[in-house]
Length: 420
Image 1 (spheres, rainbow, N blue to C red):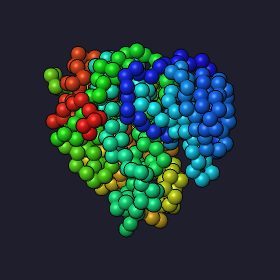
Image 2: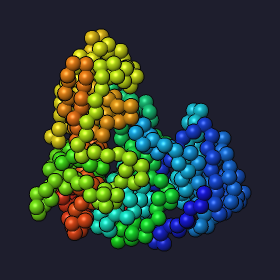
Image 3: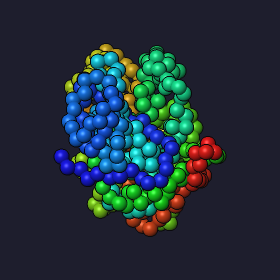
């Protein structure tokens, strides 16, 4: 596979990010250019199957490495494997019977890939600049809170008072704190990061450079910026999807054009959608409004597999709690043999689909032995709506106006590492 090699940014960068890219019993890696192995030896242009912990450091600006068989879209309907190429340092560690490949690189170089991986590099410059600021803010907020010297243990995470099952209520969610071996993962669970494989458009690098060091802040603190593909017309609050915590800048607001009042993400413009949706994302259609139908047997079997409980025949799917956008974050499943209330939104989406429902913003229509879910939006809906923001960019809004719309009462400030 030929991949155009991109050099890291020239400016001095002190902040680095540790990204968990893949986990497997053995990892196949191809080293391009010159590298130093953990034994101190120089390695040049070689494919290696790694069966034990190892470390590889680049010896030149043109050095890169390819990981073979990286899973993307894990547990989602677009799941597949790709060969992906990266710059920076490669560390391979062991956890039990598995090996995990971790890419360590400067944050600004990481951002170039994230923006290209999360959306099409052909998007408008102002939309890309907005994406650069929120992606930088999200990751810097994580790095600044990086525990020292170690991350939380799995035992500590499992003892969290927020999660677990008790008295017929199952509450669970996923967030970056679940990762104990690195800062963030490379998939949709955190931010998509597919190395320099997708970082091929100079506009992306320009967007990162022109917003260099800019982060979004609220009351002097870097914002935990969240974003999703399509909010369905209304954004959601942070607490609906993750911890029971109020984030003043992540609120349930209508996604309307500030000037003409139209719903921003209600678009079928293929040119705009192609800015947000990469090739495999474009396999998803009708996500602004969608419908899923299950027979009684299909639903019973699905829930048995996904939740590990035999509910018998499903009698009712009843929303117990909804967020302000209509997203369900507690859903009662009542059957002839068992009943359980589940949450939060991602747990509901996972339980009611072979992969994930587009969102938990749905109404349930039950007719005889048929359950039909009428839904809206794609993703959790918190923070910036990527399709809505792309529409704003196409209408001439600049990145500051886009960010002010999706994150009210925030400021764009330069992050000075020496003073933070």
